[in-house]
Image 1 (cartoon, helix red, strand yellow):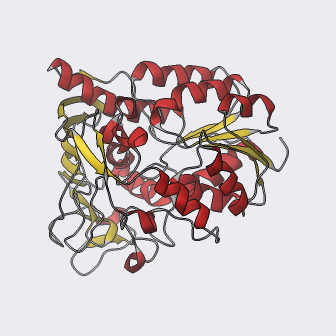
Image 2 (cartoon, helix red, strand yellow; image 1 turned 30 degrees about the vertical axis):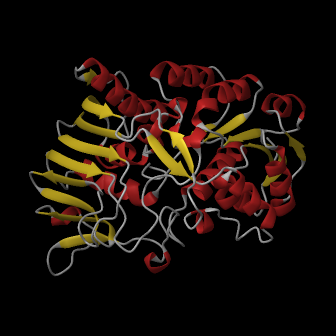
Length: 405
């Protein structure tokens, strides 16, 4: 493989213009060789802002005609399976935005196709995965016995503070967040089950209740993003999140997918814990809880959040890099929290969009194995799909996949 990877982008939406394209235009080993969107004006505007080669309005046409080595699939979830399978069939490496799929049958189709090839596929998100060195450090401590036997844990998605107007209801994107084939909020939030697995290891089973709590949602008109993109002049200032939260939400769309899911996960290490995924419509009070993972064991506790990336208190202090006067090891948050804007990455911290882009290029150029790969994606997908199946059948769902890391 040449030292320069030619990349085709499909889906010139918010994450493309805010995160992936600004990174790729500066990575000297990457070339934005093609841009594709079914609203072709978006691809044209992204080419103007970030550079790039040919512009397409048909993904399959891009695969057939563009001189590319890899595809970044940044489209709505309903396209992920056919687009990924077509890319593998065309011999292209892939970065696949979350979710990998919304059913295990589809996820397995991707995994089987990848394993039958010699191609590199990175499954997003890489946050809360071993690709993040902070996650890898805490996971190593847990494996070394810093918690003893993990007993139980809790995690969830809660609202922003009373001073944050953004809330957690997606302000745009019917196809991406509200259509049935999007998987809804359950599949939009792999970060949460991924955080459980990232720290505690593989999942064994799930028992869940899921429903649609809100049948309609007001969102910002789709054309507003096109207007924003046309007006953008600085590739480093093309983040739609900076403006969309202030735009009127005057288009009401139906919500066809689960938005309220309560799961009890049994882990391979014997621990049991609860995870709630829900669309929070109103703020919470500052300091009342972040929903971040908390795990409790016979020898110690792991607390994420509270101003730190993660904190551990344990009677196995010999395993910790350091402790404060109260006996805690605090892993600091990287980056400037004072400039953090939900839901964007903390400035200067782990930016999974950038990290994943670099990682895929590393894997292609240096022939490395991706992290997270399709096996990781299969396991996280099954934790979400299993929750839906459990709710629909009224029975505990036994996982068919596992991970060893």
